[in-house]
Image: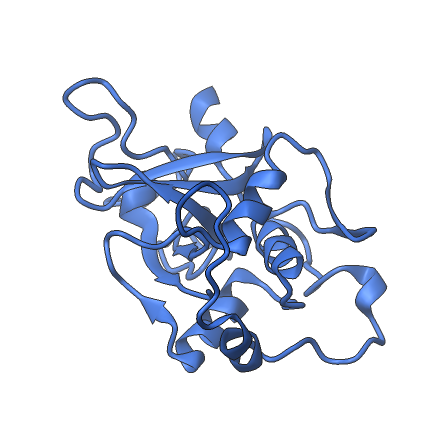
Length: 216
């Protein structure tokens, strides 16, 4: 049970602000469509191969207990990390995981390939019982930033957990397996077990995943 509690990212809260408080009263952020157009054709290379600014930004927060970009402090939760990673890459997006998912869908950059690109944003459903009704009907409760894809298809991501900004592993070729034949972790737990969980509740990252969005 302790392991499960440590890996859970976004957790229930009495209320959520849509972005950093010091942005209130400022102009609207750059539209995703403009950001996508500006990033099209980018060839930035951070490690000897094509790799996005968003992925590099997310990795820069690993181990941090606060998320700060250019003096602005972001919410210490899953969507706060995504906001900060996008901001560091040049897109002043503000919103929840569900809002970003909807915006990505509208912009035509949402996809369901099993091998995403570094810098993609991953979305998950039912990582906790958000409405506390005991049913698995909680959409877009978590998000993470893809930083790499290993040869066996395991997707390496960065997200916010109760222990801080850490890595998250997911393998969509084996979504129901926590470890592989050799003992390597394929899917981290992304939901803590509860006695109130209904029959059929899923807990692994690969089981809770619902899509990726490509922003670069």
